[in-house]
Length: 100
Image 1 (tube, rainbow, N blue to C red):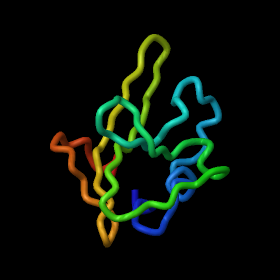
Image 2: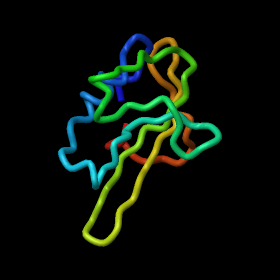
Image 3: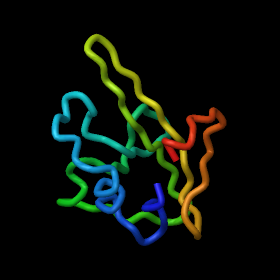
Image 4: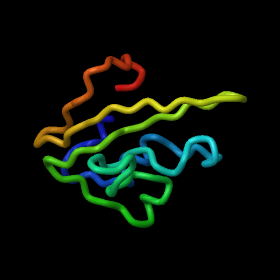
């Protein structure tokens, strides 16, 4: 998540997350806006390198991971605020060091 800071782009974030290869299991969005709908603009996705969005201070996103098993899956999210120096985690549920 160290790629989340003003001046970096959604392509920088997506590049750090890597290419999942099989988008049917992960979905195309790794980072998305939050507000009135479940997944809102702006996105960091597999398509970010083709159409990058520049991150700016005070943008709010959900950074999401998806773990899929044979019969089920789960999504975990951290809600984050882009600050002048990087990001602040707004979520109150601890997801552990591996997610940060």
